[in-house]
Image 1 (tube, rainbow, N blue to C red):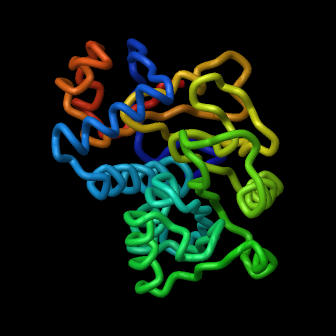
Image 2 (cartoon, one colour):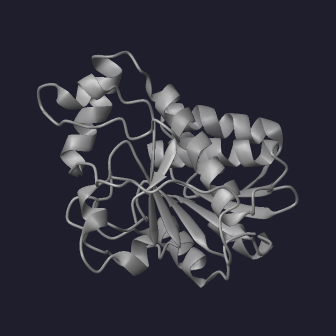
Length: 254
């Protein structure tokens, strides 16, 4: 069964809520992963995209994506890169995947640009806002437009794609945060994605837990991107985090 029923594979709930992170703290996690531990952005992006594809398959596509239409919205930064990994994975599992970009390829930062090049090499349909009328009605929309780098209201193509996703009949699964939501304050900008579910990464972002965001964030999941417990406990964060992913790479928070 898909979105309107139950997930094909149960995803465990977390009994005790883990610590949450501000945007500044998540930036520090990313910095420490790369500079202190040598876990490069490509690895984190692959982990995020694989988990996102798994959640899409199990929660929204009934455990079998073959022949199901999925539209992936990808911005130019890390959030878009994770969404592009998800697009590649779902394509490999038999889904019919279309990708909508916010900008031309040259504006993508280096690691997401690498993921986009792979997607293009695979022959997936990759379109821009001007070709929205060519997009077939999907069973699921993946939101990878804007992550914790949000600065004010989404604009131009990002805003147009948010409006398109909100008007679609399909559920939206957001990566890390619904595009248009501030991950520290929980401020909902205009426009903002109204997600059926959000899969956030590493630890929950504080803004997603603010009261009144339930209809924007939807079901809230947390995915493992390989952050070592010692990183959380180190200087700059000093958090004690239990092994959240001992039995599953994805857990449900709400």
